[in-house]
Length: 555
Image 1 (spheres, helix red, strand yellow):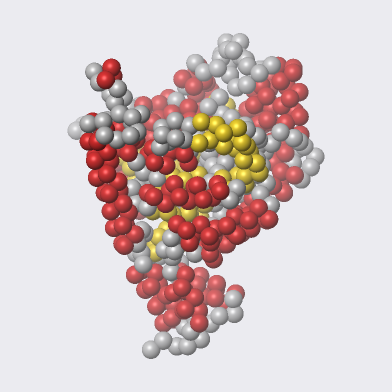
Image 2 (tube, rainbow, N blue to C red; image 1 turned 180 degrees about the vertical axis):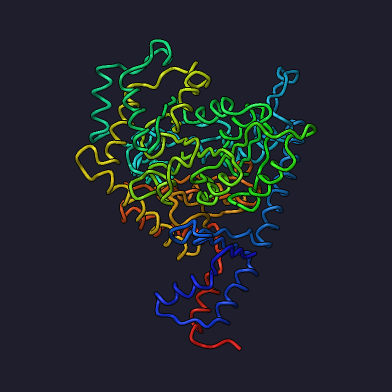
C-alpha cells in the first residue's frame, strides 16, 4: 500500500537519483513502486501539506512480508504446543526443571496473572529472559560495564560469575545528548548541591519540600520551552498518569493515538473520560473522530462534550516516528479541541537548539495547550514537567495528585537538570550543548543510512534517534540480543506483548556521545548478526538490480 497524501513520492525519487547522477524514466520509477507494493512497503510522505510543512517530512514503514508473518505465527504456534506439553510433563513430574512447577502449598492461592499470561511467562518469556534486566556496574554512557550472570535452570534464576564485561557499546539507553556521565560540569554541580542540600527532601512541595532550586528549575524550563509557566514532577510516568485525570473527567472526550505510551493510556483511563483511539499518525482518522464527536456529542444524551483532548507524542519510542504536529495543530484549531503533547523522547533530541518537535517544525509553542516532557532522556536526570499557560500550571499545582501528594525532586537531580539545560541553551558560556544537539542529528542520519545500506528493515523518521530494527520471529529476539552482547554491543530487544505479535524488533538509541568509530563498530558487526539470525527480509538485491538497468528503458 502506498500513501501519497500531497506531494508525489516519484518527485522525491527523481531528486534522489539526480543527486546520484542516475537518470530514471517515469516507467522505471512506476515499476519501482510496483515492486514496493508487491513486498508491502508503505511510504508516508507529507511534504508541504497545505503549506503546513516548511520542509519535506518523510517516514516509512514496511508491512510484515506474508511469508515472514506465516512463519512467525507458526513459531508461536510451535512454542505454544510445546509449552502445553511441558505443562503436562510438569504435572506428572516428568520434566527435570522443577522450578517451573506449581508448588503444592500455593495451589489454593489467588492467581496473580490470567491463565494465558501465566502460560506465556513460563513457557515463552523465560526462554529469552536473559536479554532483560542486565545489571550495569558503571555509568551508562556511550559505553558501560555489565556484571556477567549465568542461569542453570532455564532463566528462572541467575547467578553471578564475578566477571565484568567491560566497554560494552551502549545502544539501548535514552542518553540522547550524552549527559549521563560522572564527569564534567553537570556532575560537579550535582555533587556540590548534594553537599549543600543533601540527597532527599522528605516532604512535598506544598509543605516543607519547596527549595529555591525547584523554583529556579521551573522558571528555566518555562523559558526553554517558550511558555508562560512550568512545573516539575519527580517521576516521568506519573507526570502523565497523574495529571491527565486532573485535566479531564466525566463528560470529556480523549482522542488518543493507538501507539501512545502506557503512561498516557493509564492517565486517560484513570480520568474517567470517554476514550476513542485513532490510527497512528493518521490525520484522516483523527479528523473523522473529531467530526463525529462534534456532530453526535455524548452517548445517549447527545449533549456537547465538556472538553475534547487530543493525546499525542513527539517521538514514538517503539516506532521511531515523529508526530505530524502541524496537521494536528491545524485540526485542533479547526475543531476547537485541546492538545496534550508528550515530548518525553523529542525534547532535547529534535530541533536546531534541542527544543523538541515544536521547534523541529518551526511552530509556535503557544499553539500547544499542554506541553509535557521528561528529564530522564536528553537531560540525564529523572522526573518530568508540564508547561503551558500560567492559569493551567496554577490549577495543576492544587489539583494534580502528583503535585499535592508526591515527594519533591531530589536536589542533585534538580541541579543536573538546571546545569544540562543551561548547557543546551548556551547559558553556561560554551557551545557544548549546541554541538551535542548537532552531533546527535548527524549520528542519527548516519546510523539510519548505514543500517538501510546493509539491508535491515528499519522503522520511523529519518531524524528520529530511536531506530527500530525489525526481527519479527520470537526466536530471533533472544538470538539477536545475545549475539550483539557477545560482540560487546548492548541493545534492547522487544517482543509481544509490548509490540504486535508479528512485529518483534530490536531498538537502537543513538546518542551524541557515540563516536563514528563506535557506530562503525556496530555496522561492522551487523552483517554477521544479520546472516546468523537470517534477517535478509529487505528488497536490497532487487533494488541493486534495478540500479543496473537504470539507463535502460523498460518495455
